[in-house]
Amino acid sequence: MLVAAAVCPCPPLLVPEVAAGAAPELDAARAACTDALGVLAAARPDRLVVVGPADGTGPGIHPQGTRGSFRGFGVDLDVCLGPDRGARTPGTGRELPYGLAVGAWLLGRAGWADGPVEGIGVGQALPAERCAALGREVAARAGRTALLVLGDASACRTLKAPGYLDERAAPFDAEVGRALGAADVAALAALDAVLARELKASGRAPWQVLAGAAEGAGLAGALLYEDAPYGVGYIAAAWS
Image 1 (tube, rainbow, N blue to C red):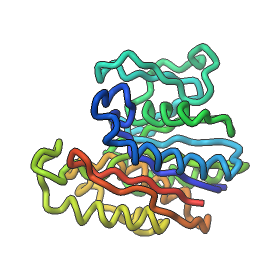
Image 2: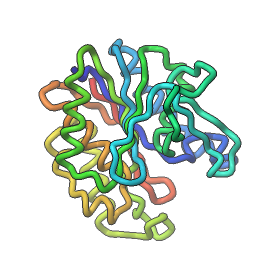
Image 3: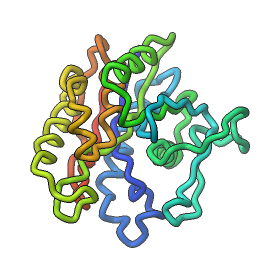
């Protein structure tokens, strides 16, 4: 049963060591993520499932203890998914994809100790129906489940954005922000995967996993942050 969800952006720039001198520019986003994680902790879940973007189709499962790093972004910083037991989980041969690495950093920053953690990476190619089915599978597990859902909205909001300016980006982001703030499961499930890919919105598949998990859960949403620094849409929300 899904009892709560936190939705957070996942740019590596959220990590101050990666952002360096620009770190203060995302202080408000970090604060919103902290608030969203507080909602998860207050729900007292039996487990936390972290869902974020990944390469390929997936889903790729990452057990608690899986490690990641930000070396690819020029920073010698390692993270661990969930409490760090001092060793890699047996059988885990892959590092966390960048989105889940940001999620691990957020959890470590918050001192997460409110239940075991598991990561699931989903790619942009994963169809909406499969995302929803995956979400239902997660929510159907015994006990109280919470989700930390990571992903960014469009990367096409300005001329200097990674995807250049696309006039479809702002309306797309506005609808995503509205749906996440209202816990509108149907609207999230209906997001156009092709349009999301064209707008470089990494959050589409994770958000649709959330939509599947939240079916029938009756959760209410609150929009905590919405902005587009660097021309990329960042949204944070909490469902409980």
